[in-house]
Figure 1: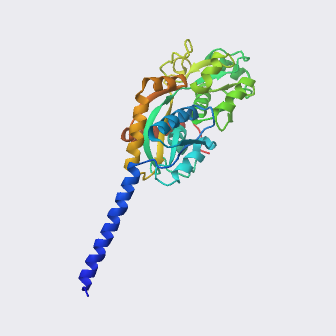
Figure 2: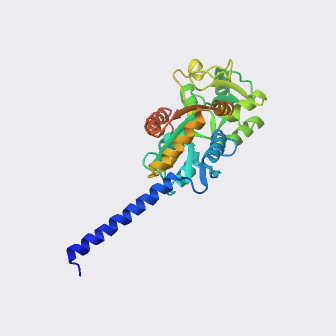
Length: 328
């Protein structure tokens, strides 16, 4: 019989082989990714800017990779429910998150306790683009400019309300209140489309719709745009001034859209997704489709997006503190 030393060497050899086989199987699985349907979890409702972009992305990934990419909307709490679900999912590439600054830039400053870490619990895949928003009012109100909104609110303290279905709307609204000293009431929504419905109906007086949901209503004249909230003007709202040049010098806010996987997702899976997403966003027709739906493509691969998420977290935390929003 072999001695103890020989038996130990044999055991070590068998263990090494087992680990090598397991690693090879894992690599093979990642290289053939995906082998089954993939779920894309979205933090906002059907028809929102994020949902519209996600469905286009899912369609293209399905065609490129040969497996179903299913969009699942999990609305509520400014995206916390969706982000938590993905943070707790296995890091195998079969549960992904398409989200915005709401979950990864603003949430840690808006809430005292969130059940995930926006940096440690995710693998950033890619930054896909940005979505603009603007300040709009119900057209039955005697308000056509930002200055008239302030005058109306001061003449009718506490009577004007604004809706917010995401953190861009919430932070913009609270910044407007703080910088102009007006008394308007925030009405929270799970996502932007129902807030827009109430704006059209006159149940709320103002909101900050994203271009995806808002521009069609501007064209239909069911809402009235009075200010853009980015410093650089969009040609989709010709003649509409910015808050920077009217009431709030220096104000400049825009939402970003990106894809995340759970932490510890295999690098091979990340590379597969990055490769196809980069191909997709480089196509002129795809970029045009996104632009028509309100999203401007701004590509950033996994490493670039990782740095960007950290920078945006710092930026939004400072902005939220500046406007005086107390964490819930």
